[in-house]
Amino acid sequence: TAEATTRCPLGAVRSVLGRLCEANVHSGAALSGGVTFDALGSLSGAPFRVVAVLGLGDDFPKAEQPLGFDPLRRSQQPLDPSARALSRAAVLRSVLAAQNTLIFTYPGQSVQNNAALPPSVILAELLDTLDDMFVVKSGPEQCKGREAEPSSFHEVLVTRHPLHPFDPRYFGA
Image (tube, rainbow, N blue to C red; front, side):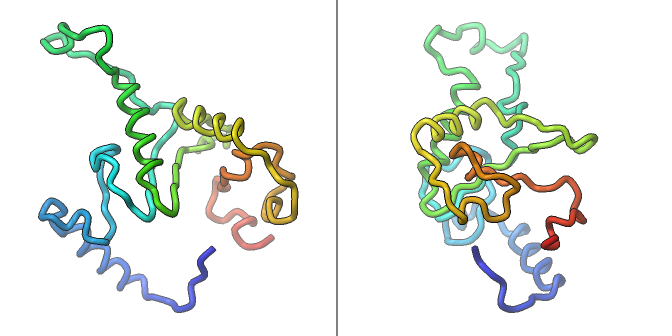
């Protein structure tokens, strides 16, 4: 884990992020070594040190809502890819594009009552595949910061954050 060694004023961070967000990403600067925000799958597998895919909740991919006047939809062939297949391929391309770090996020609990929410089917299948491929080695480093010893590989990978920012777990209690 990285540790901050110097403090940076919040105003300076906001200023830098504001300038970066105002920059024209389509001017060829998308792959210039900075931070790039883009739609899932649109960079077609270009390599990145860190790839973060946000919002892989149980509503991803969105259900297809065909338009009544869409002529391509009416002429769709049996082997044409569905939106679900294209979403799955985009997630797998993001796995291949990550060189050092891969981060998937999903809302793991309800904001109303803290009930557990499942990840998307695509992410659940990926976690199940990793569970089948890897075995958890018991030891103190796997249990650090966890309430119980992990029994599956995805329990080592998945970090569950408390619902509230003032939760005692964030303050070392």
